[in-house]
Length: 634
Ligand code: ATP
Ligand code: MG
Image (cartoon, rainbow, N blue to C red; front, side, top):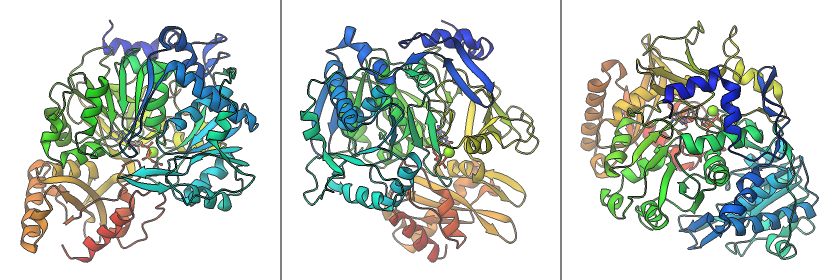
């Protein structure tokens, strides 16, 4: 076993040999002729000339050895549905869906927009697209009609796959009328809309000639055998939009061969899941984590994946641990936001079930603050908590511990080290020089980007180059637009987004650092800190906090006392320079549907400006809370 350092060094210094070995983790119909073509920087083509297929690798190739093993276990605490598909059954369902798509004349290179709740048919649809060489564009179910329409026009899909409704917290969330509205708004609506009818919305109406019922179509293709379309490695597999935390979402285009190899590599070296073992990722198929670690990663690896429709606290806050116990889950993947939800509940739920099979809990999507990391680590005693950092753009972790390579110690607050092929450098924002250990720099990647990363912005090569490689004039490096430091031991610490830095009387502070300091107060469940323009100091930090026990801030005296405690905590943890000019208490914070804080909108409101594009917001009521809090003087 090499050390992590040797492993990573080799992935860069002996790049071709390293990735040639990793490429053997998947099946190729035609072998590639070269590992990398980087003749047109910054566009990287991996495994040139090789032909492969994501669906073949995720499904067909496991039929020989594990046809009767569970591939997909579906659990919904919303509808009570539970189903289990072996690889053999998954293969049959994917072939049926592929035959349906083909009957609608979807072929190689055509786009299919998938706007679906968390139901197995969504997985079948995505794998069916991959099988026939069509490009899926999954749009998070429940996005408003306007957001959906923009994505329809960007991808120009031939067919859309949807459902009558999603379910959330026990209530049906009708989708179909949003689809109809989006098709009206769009310039390039799909010709056909395939509906997987769950029977949740009796009021659903159909558009004659356009809308088709999946159950009826499926019944016509029960024994379908649809041959796999072998794609050249660089051909696109899918389009997926970034979360839209910082503005207009970008359409990330993913390749085929590089993605499969990267996922296979990460399943072993990072996520430590062997074929036959079970992974439970709590994300949604509408996000990159869902694409990579609910669907493609575990299936390409021959593992069992759990797809869960439901909240982490229904029917009670122990539901995840029940799933772990019932299905012998070895590795879980979730988000810090979700863990903070559990942190507000009775800790006894964390111990209600025997979770001894669980070895790893991976968390990504937002900074994992130290108190939350410690809390979950203590509550789940014996489970390794692994912060990992990445983006929709990268498709798989950029930074993570690699316990499948070496059992390195973790440091709270750090996603450890760079993944294979990532030449990570922290650059000074103005000089572009590498910063010293402990100094803050922009987290960048020296191209070529490794396999699995975005190959371009869908339909817009120029935007890809300008957006991601245009930050440093003399250095064409990929910018993540995140700040980080690296300590003397080589551990990275992500400090937040480059536009989340505030300037207080000439001192530059990351809002994340202040949030961490506020979170050190045991009574705080969650907090957002933004910089608000101030004529004297430039900017002052303003905090919006959610307290664990709302009774503590139910009276003006309670609010004043809590506010003082929070400020004292920041003084102690960070110093008076970081002390918020105001601390507001709210019942919830505005977040994107993928659980990320919309700091920009909060900041706009705090400065009396328009909160901007809110199409990706989870609950507009949260903004009302911010408005109301601001109306009451601190
Ligand atoms: P947009 O790019 O459209 O504004 P977004 O950046 O929120 O949206 P994603 O690709 O879903 O879209 O999120 C990636 C970002 O999430 C990272 O750039 C980083 O800011 C944050 N992030 C992800 N994982 C971590 C982590 N482990 N620690 C800190 N931040 C993280
Ligand atoms: Mg981003």
